[in-house]
Image 1 (cartoon, rainbow, N blue to C red):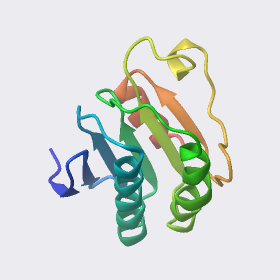
Image 2: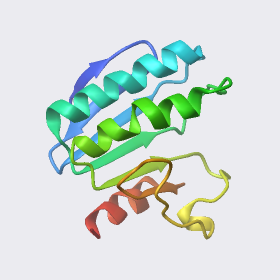
Image 3: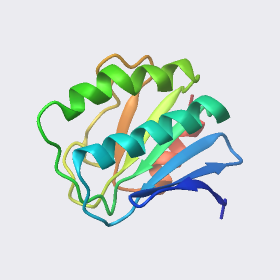
Image 4: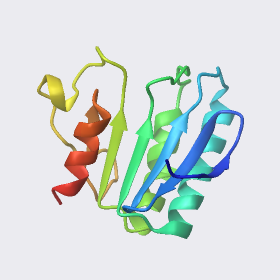
Length: 133
């Protein structure tokens, strides 16, 4: 298991040796400001480590977004991932989540992203997807 690079009350960020930077959301309720702070921290670590792949483990994610939060993410975070050299972005989500690769979903270029994003109910499927660049 790779060591945690940095963490806050809502998540842990891990840099794996195989070029993956991972954000593991903790099962804690948060505000939109806490969500934004954690994504800003993840983007900062991506800028420093320049990973090929980003993985967000949202299997224990507890937040419901307020108005404008996803637009803020598109405007302020996604371009930073692209500038850091990210080639693929995967979400590991709980079983039953809609539109995962396992249920017929497809990878997409979301918002201003210059890299594809895909949603997976299996962590291993996400890791396998990274290998097929």
